[in-house]
Length: 300
View 1 (cartoon, one colour):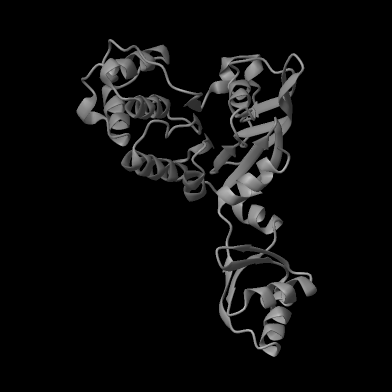
View 2 (cartoon, rainbow, N blue to C red):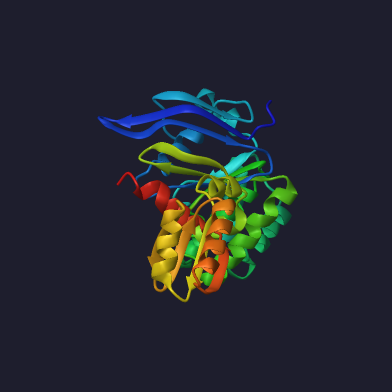
């Protein structure tokens, strides 16, 4: 049994002439909170379905702790989660649904059920029928069901779907604490600000292909350093920047610069020589959202 939770190489899935997943490579290391991101239709959910053996792949390999889910359900030992929305029996209570799922897995102690309900803050609604639950509550119950298996790998597809801001905050806290308990998380979401808060590594998929995989700091570094410049004469500052090969754009009275630190040093000296007062010069750290759109919209 391998210690690596997820290794995907050359994964392919096609529907006719459409390549939903096109030679995708992923590596999720133990202890990662790994964000899997992409626009609608980019192939995220299809990848997760193949990862869990829910649909057949057309090519490539999948390994979960060294086991291939295409070769049997034993590959899903130590793995839990859900793809899209979790499904429950609406006429049973939250607690009854968890007991039933535990029975299908060989039995479960009532204390374990109570513990996971408490983790997702559903103890007060545990005796209510799931048919009365909101979408956000069903998402939380889905995570409770996954945690009931004591997984080493938790696969979550849009777990914050339907949650209000307080629920999203609580979900973020829950997910961020899981690696301390020995749980690796593969987390697909469209809420980029949440991914940026909790994930240490990300993969961005576009048109079925991986546009980037790595740490967030590596992603930012790949786009170069950005700076925000405000001056007393933006026209003169823009001209000076272009003369020195510094990339520049303007937005609402601010100049946005990209270039090496040495080029920025030379620019500030030149602005002083020309008598252009610098009101503000600060390094700008791009958000995950900005980088995401640059990677996924350039080819649109």
